[in-house]
Length: 280
Image (tube, one colour):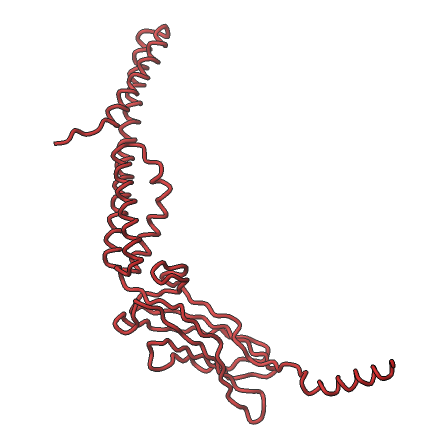
């Protein structure tokens, strides 16, 4: 019985021998990297993660290719964007065996009249290499195809900058103490919310205006807060100087009176700062 099982196992191994073959080592793309996009992440308008460049700008793409042959190979990269009529092609580079090369591709982003910002675009990266056979054969392969490429209008690109600045100073906005500054903060939040709504609808020009208003309100609120805080500090220092002068003339026996006077003075300053302005 054991001999029969052994014979069957040998027959199975012989039958599978032509099928189980080692994968030939060939040149391949190891990685790609898009440099300095305007935005990379979730976009509420497109409702997905995007890679975005501004229209009529130049995108930079790095493609790292490794030559797994023992001998050198002629390697070339081609990139096709869906609005193009032809590929963007790199120079042909001789890459030594068991070595790599990083290709830098410059890709001109078309105007939105050609590459619309209303929908996302796709791109395909090809690589081409010569084999280590005699004669050498040119092999073309597809590395990747993606469909999350966004071409931003000028308004969209500016909105990215505005929202980043609003996010950066948001922590300060939460520390507003004066009534006027808090009113400006509320106005800023309202404008920011409207900007978000307009962006979701694809009304990028209106969205840009609302975000601009939000940033202006926020900046004015900060300036108002700083001005009132400076007035408060100057007032406190003035009261302390007055108390110090009084104490030097009347002696330390008036210490309690001076402390009380200090608190009264601070109270008057706070009231004058926070007192609502009368309507005209």
